[in-house]
Length: 209
Image 1 (tube, rainbow, N blue to C red):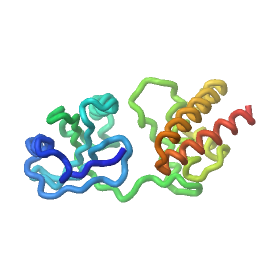
Image 2: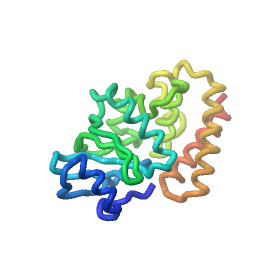
Image 3: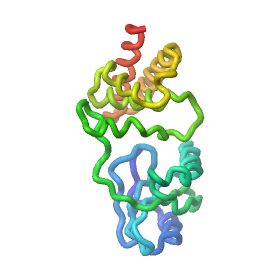
């Protein structure tokens, strides 16, 4: 999703945010992140704050509500939610700003991989336990891992070893079809890479089971 910069927001949206943060003295848009139209790091009167948001009619607002609901349960490993609001046509979440040096490196041989395999709360949604490791597996393949290597890393994640092979096979097929459709409609490189990874994984599962 293309990000909207602070200066490009309509005045009522900026005013809605500043009613809660105090005057914004400086703003920059986060370069990472795929799911929020707003991803702003603000130097505000109340201190630095990260604000993310979507127009109220966007289907992703459901995810933001879930993110707000679970925040109090994950604060030992996640920034604290400061406030949530629907104002000026936007659904907004504000968090403590925690500067990070970089995103995890998923490439083969990365020292980050052993740390990433305890992370299991990407989607606050009820579902089969193997789905998070399977999504991690696709990211690994998109970063250069072969399917066998990616499955070995997924096997270190909670829930993978209890997954029935037919269920994993079905998820691989569904993922390949999903990302093929996404890639047809959007030619961003990361979507093309995931489509290729999902197709390769589906083929690997078909040939090894």
